[in-house]
Length: 408
Image 1 (cartoon, one colour):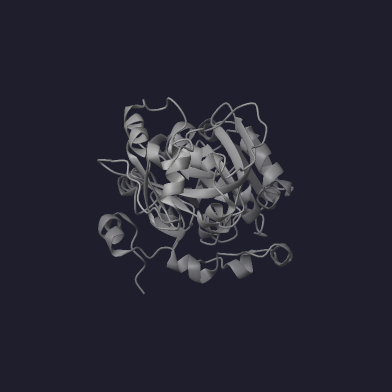
Image 2: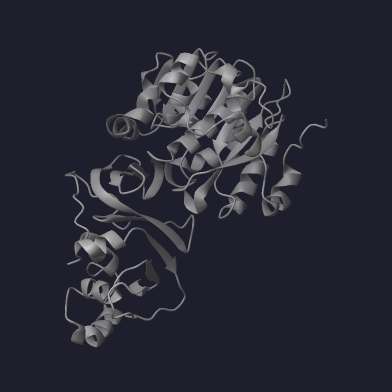
């Protein structure tokens, strides 16, 4: 069993896939760095930990004389036949799971550590130390997990993918909201598709010009879980201007009269499962139809580092659909894959929109009373302008597809 000293030293873990593996045990001295085989294609890189001690844990606590025999047994063991090393190490941290009727994403979360592993970002994973699992459930659409982390506060996970943490959610919620709303004068009617945690609602509610906020979230469990475990995020649901619709966002938009909204924010998860339709051309057409002339949309648009083909497809679909401005912005979110996330911003034909320079500056747009009670942590006008500056590799791929800045 891992002692308190080892638990203190195991602060953060990263997993990397490799082509060939060999079970290795190095560093007989406690505290020496090294490498440990977790499964047939996965290694654990651990800072400042005793490999000898960890190996004993992984192999069920046997003494060192059994190492060679254990290596041979590990090589023959069918995948999934029993707990692997990652699970055993994680269990040794003694995190307390909450009771639930369903075990969600057992391959991704076990007592002690959460590791985000997905085909959307192959060959890498980011792990957070779990202090306590607060909720595990399975809705009609996805697995839902909430846990208390050692460094990022509470964490919401859907289908094994981090959606938000208390520490860095501000960077995403504030940017996806204020980038579009500060780019048009006096937005009054705003729709949110997805966004069941309520964070985007919280940010929209800051804008004093807004009269109506509609939200269509497909999964009621996400709303309920957010209200219970993330009250500072879900506070947006308390605003009297908010109208909550539980259902399919695509179906909801088909029933919306043409020209209804000044802005639509699509706060979706990645383009798999229930969110896949929110990244396809027919959906963009329904967004365009629901906007008034010169209205704007902002949608989650993946990471420049790992999703460039997806981003180019999104840009292409938007160019085909929206006849106003087309721009791409990004922000830093440490717990998202590669540490950043992008946004696609588009406007419908009509009054010109320059996303790069806010015409509705945040200090004039928001209600001062609401701002003083719950100050923003990330967005400001300088961050707005900077968000559209692309690194050179992304400029080469995307700049010719985007709306150029207006000539001075």
